[in-house]
Length: 101
Ligand SMILES: [Zn+2]
Image: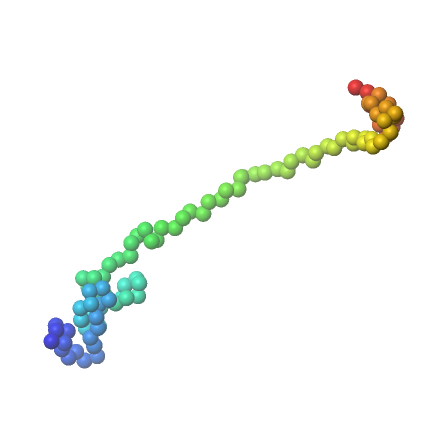
């Protein structure tokens, strides 16, 4: 016979989930994990479990698009005849201006 083995109308015996001792169910309380514990075994939830990270916004405050690149048209000479002089002296632009530097 233990201390909890007595008649209490509307109550029943239950064991503490931590220490395993027998108590009346009305003496046990439910903790944050959903387990029923006696008064001595009841523990509070650790405050660090409530810590939440601060959401960090890594985007810069403003941005702008880059300038569009300017492409230069370069004439391409493809020849297999070695007798043709492909030096720069005779190359011209589309308007006929020589490409001499
Ligand atoms: Zn206990």
